[in-house]
Length: 292
Length: 292
Image (cartoon, rainbow over all chains, first blue to last red; front, side, top):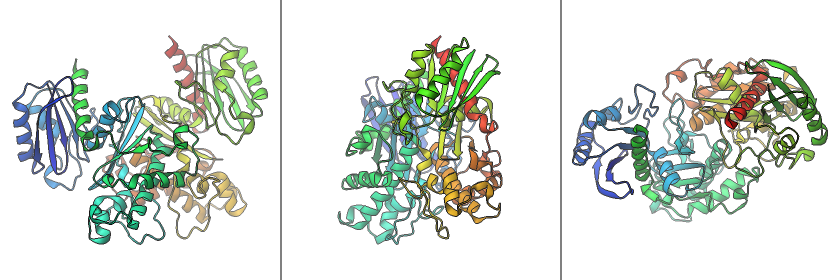
């Protein structure tokens, strides 16, 4: 058996699963202080004989395995977690091989292994929810460099008619500042799911996300772009995002996939909200295989 | 001995070199029709007993070795080269292992192996010249996906005081449309090197390039960003680009390298104009090693 943790900002989903990827037991633990949440997490896993653990964690977090700070939560607004090391916390209690990656890299890996990324060389997974982030997998490896990417904060071009200034504390009207759930709510004082499907906000959001997909295409050239997270559950967004992508790209890139209606290029993850947990399960398997 | 070609849009630089990476002979051939240019290229290499060839070529070009069209020049405005296959043209005349990559990927590899990328996991190489492009190397491998990246066409935010509309036929004021050599010339009818160092155009160019470096940092997180090409020979640009990067990032990313003056993070390539050829030489060595 193996263990997987989708370590989110509001809850930790912990699962124990077998070689066939069947989840045998799982538990959801609220994300409180590291003391409380990690204690409950370790208690859960201690009931089983697990061979390894994979973690897809909220960021910023150190994911470079060469770093002494591997697994440390970095400069997060969740002050109780700042500088807490998830890797060390787990490893001291359960001495098995452990891989820590970001939640979005884990979700990209989940789709690469078991979703819309099967048979593709690369997968980009974007989440649009409380925040905006993205993970990237290339030939089975998740991307990190100096730090892990923070793709949610790229600058998009404001739409002239859109008078909203954005809510990112660092960049104002960057992608996250304009399209994350709290940004949509800040426009009207209503949550996204309370808004009319015809509200012009959806055109704005789709344009900004379409611009972002253009940037991601031109820079990473992913073979598929999956958009998950709470906001992406607004299905009406997808045709609008694809149209915005096409408008901004202006047929610049010549590839057969980009000449289609893009419904197989920019789409909702096959595993939906489970992409992150499934990816964390694959991280666990990889941790075990790498240790052999 | 090995062969390397920096196959540019105006000239092919061909070199023969040995195991110590010393160039023994080289020749520069103008880029005319494939018939003429490839004939001269093949004649040059046919004089030597070479084990392999590496090519860093102008794009768009198919660089996925799994593709049947590997080495084919794609939708280029150079009509004589459109759909000409450089790989096949070389392979039929000189049957040795051949690797074809983009000129900018080759330059990134050149810096990764023998320049400012030594000891780093990843290198981004941007060229700002007749056009704008970028190549990326991660752990020794150059990046491609659906196609090769076309990072020069990302959208930057127009500066309010800048009244220039850009000259990209596809995107108007994308990065290339605003900062490539012909864009700078189109503003005033003067080439960049004829302009005053204090001309406000350099502030605009630096701001757009600083924005681009922000996008590249947030998406790829390269360990170093090298900027080559004709426009980057304007040394006054570098401090301005670093300042623009810092302004737009607004201290969002927390990494010690980003807290410095960035003179070791955003800089001119160590190999200058030779980065592409040196990278093509490494492609040749890799082609030979892969064939063993």
